[in-house]
Length: 140
Ligand SMILES: [Zn+2]
Image (cartoon, rainbow, N blue to C red; front, top):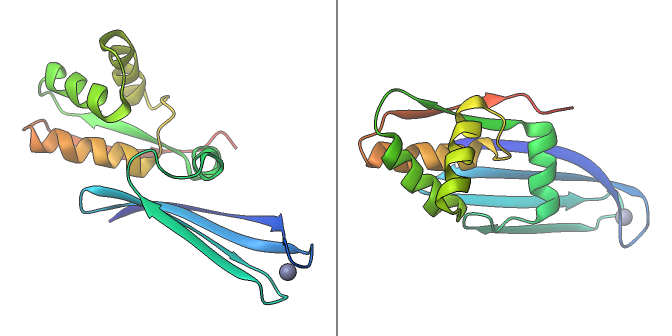
C-alpha cells in the first residue's frame, strides 16, 4: 500500500478550540481511498472517508500536495503511446493536455499526489509499461 498523510488543526465546531485533524490518501489494491479524522479535547470526534479517483475533498488534496509532496512518474522505456492513453483516461484530459501532463509527471512537476501517481503506474504496468512512483518534496 502506498499512502500519504498530513496533519493540521482546525477550530472545533462544538467548542471552538483548535482540534487536531489527520487526513490521508492511499492506494489500496487498484483504488484510491481517503479519510479525514477530526478529534478535539472536548470529546468531539468525526471521521469522514471515501474512495475513488478525484473524490477526496479539495482541501485535503491541496494539503497533500503542499505538505505530503507530489508524485513523480518513473518510466523505464516502454510505450509513450500507452502512457498517454492512461494519463488521458485517469486524469480526464484531451490529447494535447495529456502530453503536457505526462511530461510534467515524469519531471515531477505535475499536481498529482503520490498515491494518484502510484495508481497511474499500476495501470501502466498492467499495460506492460515499466512504471514506478517516486515522492517529490512538497513546496513547503
Ligand atoms: Zn471541541
